[in-house]
Amino acid sequence: MATRGQTLVAAAVLLFTCTRVTLGAIHPYNKEYFYAVGDAYIFRGGREGLYASTKEALEKWGNWGQIAPGVSNGQSEIKFTKLEFARPESVASQYEPDEGFTGLIQAVIFEVNDRDRIGFPTPQGYRYCCTKELVSKTKCFQDRLIIKEKDSGWPKVLDIYFENNETLAYSWEEAITIEDTGLYYLWFVICDENLAAATVRGQTTWKNPTGYLPGMMYPNIKFFGVMSLLYLALGVAWMIMYARHWQDVFLLQHWITGVVGLGMMEMSTWYFDYVNFNATGFRPYMTTIYAVLLGCIRKTLSRLLVLVVAMGFGVVLPYLGAIQKKIIALGVVYFLAVCALDITSNVGTIDDLTSTARIMLVLPVAILDAILILWVFTSLSKTLNQLQTRKAGAKLELYKRFTNLLALLVWISVAWIAYEMYYKVTDQFNEKWQTEWITTDFWVILNFVFLTIICFLWAPSGSATRYAYSELEDEDFALVEAGNGKKKGEPHFRDDGEEIEKLE
Image (cartoon, rainbow, N blue to C red):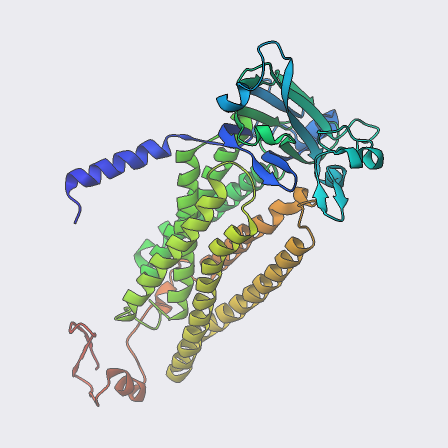
């Protein structure tokens, strides 16, 4: 076991890590290397959804989350700041001090729909760098990136030169104004093998008309603002009923209170996280991780809440007994799996995960959700049979409604998963980036709807105790429950040996 000192050190390290900042709209490069792609060496500097620099864009989004003067100015741009390219000393020493330009790195900015304008397909493979044979075919310039420009001057290309025998090359301070809405990419490209070992450091800043939040994420400001208000309304309504009937509240309703409270905190934290991100271009680790952990706890407890409700906890069962350990174990595994997915998706530079990485993170969560759904409906079937055997009319009606609503939501979930798969397959290059937020935020809405349903069905009231666990009335069923032929007046024990009631 860890000593107290070790625990304090670990906590200090965690706190230090969490107080660093996550870079989002500001893309940092810290001596990054180029990668061989076909006949070129390419470093991908980032991608963002950017809206056009127009007054209409500013009017469309309004002033949601704008707290920094000068940021919400209607200007959309990609700004190059302190970019520094380095080549090995062994390469630089090959040239004379007055030789002139001795190396070239090109920065190209293009919109996703212009991707076919970069490079040229040949029978030998896709070529990015111009050769003598391709000059006549593409009108390119030898030893440079092959670009088929539009009349508008896009894609944009910036040339950064090494001079003489210097090891460093710098880009000037440059701001590329975005005049058309789209998903923009930035690549740094080398067509000279002598520069294959070059590195890049510095940063680029990507700004939308109303702030630094990437276009595909900007709707989340409004969304989580609205969700914060909805959770607040649900929480106020629940607490009013909770306070009025506090003497009749049973354990299951305490659990519901905790889930509602977590939802309120999570939604408000996400809202302020996005507001801060939009105003500054930075995401503090502490705020983002706090929001992610709140969400992971809420998701885990929500699913376990549905499971124990399906088992009849507090209504049919006074305690969970030996099954409690299995529920806790499943909850811990689910929490770890969803943490891995959500932290990787939200903490770090804002960019999509690779398909393989996403599948590796999503798959465990999907499998655990499938196990939970199977367990929930199996438990519901047993609970309904028990209530029907007991002829508990009110409780049976309650669980029938719960089962029907749960089945409806499961079918909606399956249909939405099928839609998400279709969406991803038909949008491999994220051309529909402006509506991508809907695919993820839908689950937040669905969880809220289901939580609202549970709050409605198990709302605190003066007659709430009629839904709580009560002694069995049917004698035959009581004998079955007691087991081993126990009769009236004999004590009934739990699995751990503690007496819980006498059948009278």
